[in-house]
Amino acid sequence: MGCMFERHYRLRLDADLLRWQAEGTISAAAGEAIRRSLGPTPVTVGVATVVGIAGGLLIAAAFLAFVAANWSAIPRVARLGMLLAGIAGAHGFGAWFARRERPHLADAAVAVGAIVFGASIALVGQMYHLAGDFAAAMLFWSLGALAAAVLTGSRGALAVALAVGCIWSGTRALEFDDAPHLPFVAVWLVAAALALSWKSAPARHLVALAALAWWGVNGGDVHNPACVWAAGTALLLGGGLLAQASGPAPVRALGETVAAYASFATVPVLAFAVIDLSGTLDLSAWLIVCGILGVAFAAVASMLMGRPSLLLASAGIALMLLAVGLSRQNVEGHEWLTNAAAIAAALCLIISGMLDHTRARVVGGWIGLAVVIAAITWTVQGSLLTRSFFLAIAGGAAIVLAFALARLLPREAER
Image 1 (cartoon, rainbow, N blue to C red):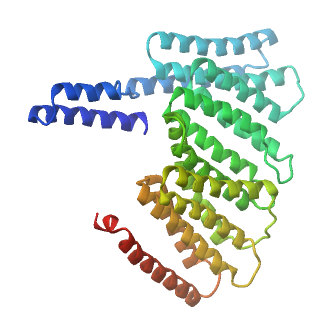
Image 2: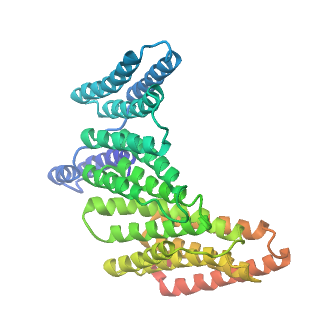
Image 3: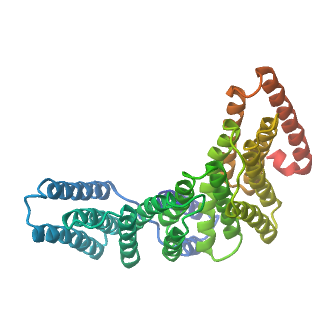
């Protein structure tokens, strides 16, 4: 839960505690004990802080534009001094804001310093006519921003490090043939360790987004990008569920965030499987391993937590992979098997999410189901009569499943 939603919850809880104390439901001591157990109320970003952050970004942009506009007229030593002054000034403001207990402004100042650092790499390279290696420059920028994040605890600098790191990884991935760019994993693990040590919701979201982005950039220049994205989604969803099932609270929180993003990532995977029914199935060993691990991780999480619902999630992952695999087969009638697997995968996610009261899986599953139904209805595969017949059969099977679940889960049916 983000700071904003946590704050709203805490304010509502404080009001409820006061009302319960006035009604005599709980004692004043009990109310105070609840407040102490939850810790201080999170501080949200105020309007003045937002305006200050926007002002800092505008000043940084103005500084860079001024330097670029007068680049040829400024002596070389002065150019280098201005760039170093920009970096030092940003971090100096960050330290000043930190001493004045303005953490958000301090964070933004360090992020601005990381951005100026990246621009300085490009300008210094141009000034001294260094050999042009775009990927190496991105790596240097990412490591510098990551170092700033480690030293200052800046979430903004972490965002810069991960974003630039994904660009670096995507550039390097173009040099390989159907293989992932694994060095990025080291950068990601450092970022994940920071998110765990900080116990920060924004950092967890950044790490989860970076993981999905990395799979995306590694699937852009291979024979089967749909298979790459499916394997990555499977691994992240299964790994996130397994992290939720064991480990300390920060690990479980990170696993929950990663699993939430992976649940939504199933939507484009299912859509791609149903819409693009062409190509060949030419899987690399690393894709097969990632897919199997995703299914296995979710199954292990089910055993550790004693939740059959996670077995449904594991089945949903397996069916998603099956749908993508079937979509690569040039066999007559395979599209209906693909559609059935995609529908079943979405239903498994919905049901498992409802049983676990996990909104991300429920919403992701419903969106995926809607996309699959829309694709089946409007795609040119097969005649309209055949498609209507298939949808009628699928609807009838869903109704039968609903009756079976109502008998197996009467309490859920009564709610």
